[in-house]
Image 1 (spheres, helix red, strand yellow):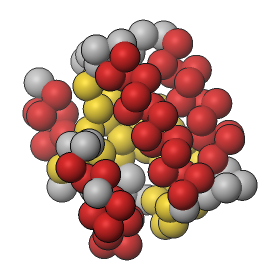
Image 2: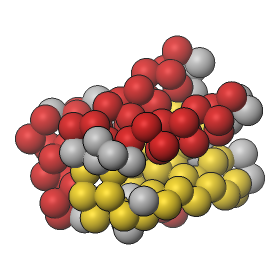
Image 3: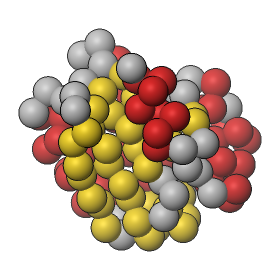
Length: 111
C-alpha cells in the first residue's frame, strides 16, 4: 500500500494505492492522522488505485470521517472500483459518506 497526498487549493487529496487491509490499515491510519493534525478540513480520497478493502480499511476511512465531522470538516470518496463500491453499498456506509465518480467531481462537491 502507498499513500500519496497533494493539495489543490484548500482541498487535500489523498490517493491510496494497493490494498487497505488489516496489515496496511495501521500505516494508513497513522499517515492520515498526520494529515489531519495540520487541520486540513476538506479531504478527497482518490480510491481509483485501491485494489482491496477489508474491514480494517473501512475502520480507517470511518475514523477519518468521524474526526472530520468532529472538526466540522468535509470528506468525499472518489473513483471507487466496482469491488470497493460494492463494499460501501453492502455495508450502508455509502449513505453516510458522499461518493463521486471522479476526483474533479469530488472537489466540486466540497466547493
